[in-house]
Image (cartoon, rainbow, N blue to C red; front, side, top):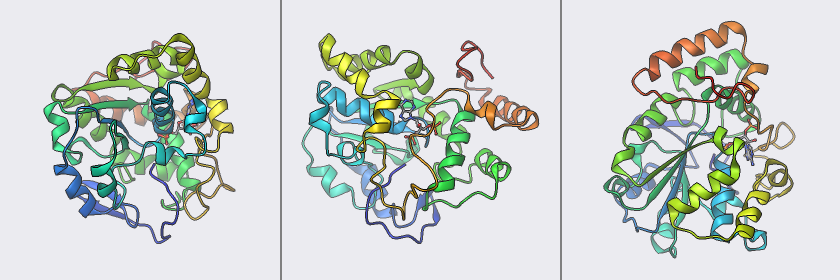
Amino acid sequence: MDVSENQPTDFQLIPHRGFNLISGIHSTETLEQLEKCEIRDTDIFVITYPKSGTIWMQQIMTLIEAKGDLNATENIPTSMRIPWIELKGSMDEFASAPSPRLRVSHLPYYLVPQALRQNKGKVIYVARNPKDILVSYYHFHMYAEMLETPKDFEEFFERFLEGRVFGNSWFDHIQGWYGHKDEMNFLYLTYEEMKQDIKGAVLKICTFIGKQLNDEQIENVVEHCTFNNMKKNKNANYEAVPDNLLNQKKGKFMRKGIIGDWKNHFTVAQNERFDKFFHERMKDMPLHFMWDAQDCATTA
Ligand code: A3P
């Protein structure tokens, strides 16, 4: 989620070409410029649906860039090390930034620079099982002041399935991106595979972006991007974001960081409804997700 300082507090979701923007944070002008902007071969875009592990990948990417040296990333918040492209007014800085430009976005595939779909630049898409996303997003809504506070979990559950949230429908987001992956230089990773084998994921990313790190540097990247270490690192956990955006008294960005927390939240009926909805919406896109850390081979 794109949060930075000094934003106004009268936030609303504003529909723009099938995607909800947050007033005061995003602007249609920026998106129009973005679509047509020039892309360099060295540009790397991290794309996620909210609560899929965006901040984790931001930390990993900047650590890889710094060859595992935490000092090179210290005192610079995540949102500045790898900024959001959809943020209002981001385009001037983007145009003049030195290479390699690392950027992050929650946008759907059809609103990002068109050149990405002509094999320019690189895209890393991080997916997460949507039951855990729903739970993580519910907790995020309970303390993010720029998003409408849910009445209760049940109400948010329906809102999420219908896509009446920032990010819109998770199903549309992943289908749009994954369905167009062959038009892009595209790496697909899941939150769950990162949880299971973070070193393997870091090596995959290094190969994809053509970055060579020695064993010690790889170990340093791995160490500084663990949940516990990021939780302690104020530049990697959004604790410095002001209360008018994230009310730190009500919640934490680095909440649990586990696979399968949905089991602590979903009723049996909600789980059945979710599975039915998932099968209907994903029948043409047989992507498999790990729903539980224990029975890691299962799919919905
Ligand atoms: P939970 O709320 O389930 O704990 P995003 O950055 O896309 O908003 O994703 C936030 C989610 O990723 C939160 O999930 C957060 O705890 C989790 N996360 C962030 N860094 C992580 C890490 N290093 N390891 C595991 N999970 C992480």
